[in-house]
Image (tube, rainbow, N blue to C red; front, side):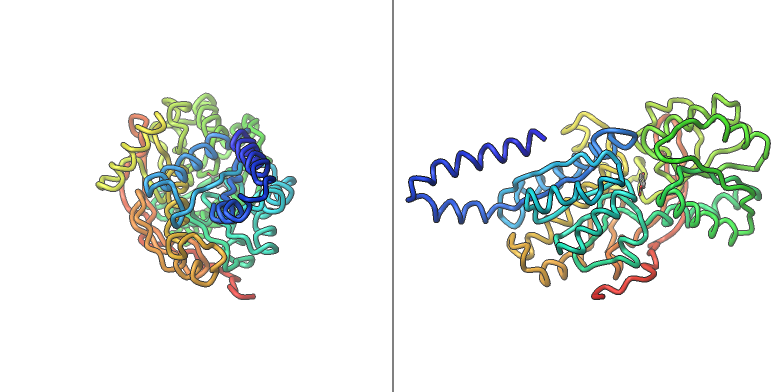
Length: 396
Ligand code: PHB
């Protein structure tokens, strides 16, 4: 919010000077030469930490390239979307209509993303999704101006079923927050686990953002599955792992998950997270010069350890820099802009990845285990996994 006030204050000062008349043409040019970037992220609630990591990543990628886009200075605008789907359209419109941003970078929550998607499709404003995995954004509602640098919700869990079966899990319970992200992740898990030969004996859920897990954990104890697989993220993920351990299930019924479960929460979850096995397109321990350099630079800049959200934000920043540079900052050169963004190879800390036809990353999925408060890679769960982009007709 302070960023917005700063921009407005400066704008008002410029208008005051311009009222002398003489300065006006240069000022008009100077203003139009700047790029207006909108950040729509959660800064409060269960996903607040995710929003901060994403913003850090975006800023770091742009700062590494000189802090400009296609040679132009940036004006930043921020909206806290609170992970509140009911306010999704209104919040996206604050950025597009009120602040006149040329690109929206956001968001985390799939339900909120649907609001951004509607506004992006109607206004044509460039949209870069640094997390939310809702399939429709790069599926049935795909659009030439919408790009994602993260994943679709089913990508990590499509890679989870086989490793679980290989680890002798035959009967599993699925548990999640009940909204698009969890439902789509559950569908990916069911498909891959069933295909491997396993059975999902029960699907459990609770409304987002509730975290009263007790009754569901009692049900799991009664069902006695070989393992539990889940989708939870942020504050809810830390609490779920702690409650799982406190209910006496840890060590008895192994816990698996879409890898968000163990991202950014390993300090908060403590011993409850040790030994949890997940699949995701990133791991702290990736032993590559690119990942090591990124982790060091991020830690130095923000005094925080990066996680998958920081990486996705960083790649969103990289994508924007590449696109803007290709059109020398003129984001209205839409054809050239989209072409440059479609044909990228992003040199990510997660490993290099490219864009699918529907504008979603084609990427490797890693099998990870939490050891000593770190997500350690123990295998590749899927190579160059592409989402099908089902229903996407780009120019429709
Ligand atoms: C989503 O709502 O799409 C979502 C939220 C948090 C995650 C992953 C997906 O970690």
